[in-house]
Image (cartoon, rainbow over all chains, first blue to last red; front, side):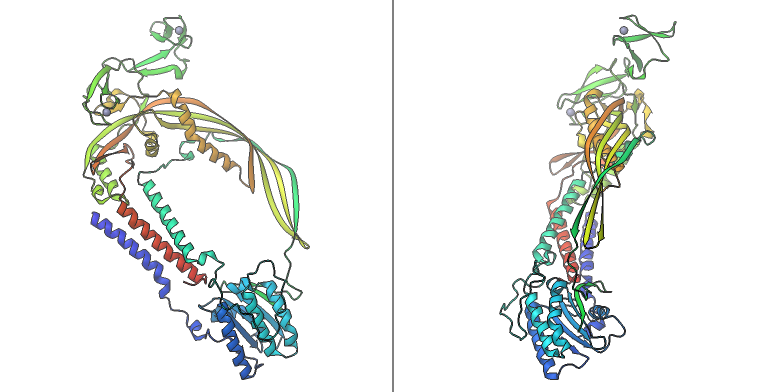
Length: 290
Length: 341
Ligand SMILES: [Zn+2]
Ligand SMILES: [Zn+2]
């Protein structure tokens, strides 16, 4: 019988491992596979010459590589009847862009020529680094060029400023953007020191390892303590329900205090910050007209 | 078995006068009507030639059984016992829960329990090293406790709302009072010196519907440990046992607040009644790896308690299994949250 017990135990273990490793076997959805995650410029409204498009593609790949983020530019002629925010959210859900994985770090600049809408969105790491305030700054910075029809200039500005912001932790500086100039001259912080999602402790392997050891230690300790039997009675076991009760009580309101706090600063007039996509991805955002 | 009546005036024994149908005290001459004689002064005592007391010369255990049963070995250490006394005049238990599980059933149940141990060494799991299996009546005091609780507290309810450019946090303060009556009945506290208190607590609950009026024949074939502590001595432990119950009951009446701060709490617990009872326990002495392990089994429900040996190898394999599993699970979660694998 000890053999059968041992088998049961190892079977259980094997099953657990199998179960846990299952998700890796799932094929990615067909749609996500069609999408080329190395392609960043989608000029459906034909605003760029092919040289310009190539140059922006190169710049996006270069800057994005250093920040481990997909910088995507979409130019649209109509948004299938959707609102531009909805369009961008669906775009992220359906195409699953990201630097090193589907639904990864992504910053999207979308402009719609029909409504003359502009929307910027940041996902994952870009949601934190390109928060609503920072996206507002970028949007305000590039809107004049867009209104002038200087699309190439506006798009390269977007890439450069986003790149800069992706290199600075978003502390309390949200408004404090210094002018980085509009040309491609970005300063040389040539590598991003801590790897992707450094700020989220949950993604750190050492954190995961320590948690696993703590959980295992906890469970085994409980098992060891329970091996000797445990207390299975509680207050209900011995209480005489007929006689035990609240004899009298009161809840008298005495006084109240009210404190007030200024609401966190909203986005600028045009509004439309971040949100959550239908697929459950939260993001930052900034919308406006040009 | 003899009923004893203690004189409410001087404390000596009263005797029943058949002619007058009343109780009379030899020393102070007091008379009491038997109908309205207070229950708590009545006690049951062993009569002559009814029960014997044995002493273990090795561990000092004091055991009792009926005169028909010849006790030879100590239930706790297995050493020989010597007869010490006739038990006449000693306090007898008022109630008993008889053994429900026979020795054979107890042995089978114990072996089954051994097999279930997830951390016990393989050699232990066979359950074939039972050295002895002894049915023992363990002395308990069953307390009926009444607690009067009065609690004064300050509760707060918090509400936030937005108006204009501001977020307002409104905190309402309440003066809260609760007057609670709590009755806990038959709280068992073992009056045995030999039995580990923690072990005995884990054996609960006992099916109280099986409580029978004590009669000496229930002892036939079994040993009972003689009680070592009086109900006065153990009352603090009974109160301690219900203190957590009282706390959680108080908490359950203070709901609906965001925070509650208790300013004043009065708990007055009184002993309403305490009964000397015998509860059935199978003691299993088990030999493993040259060490002796003692387990206890509830003689009515079959619940087993006691510290089995722990296999280091099994602990290690469970530990690493769970750690690896959790690590993979976390990796998966982080992967789906977009943190990379
Ligand atoms: Zn008297
Ligand atoms: Zn002994």
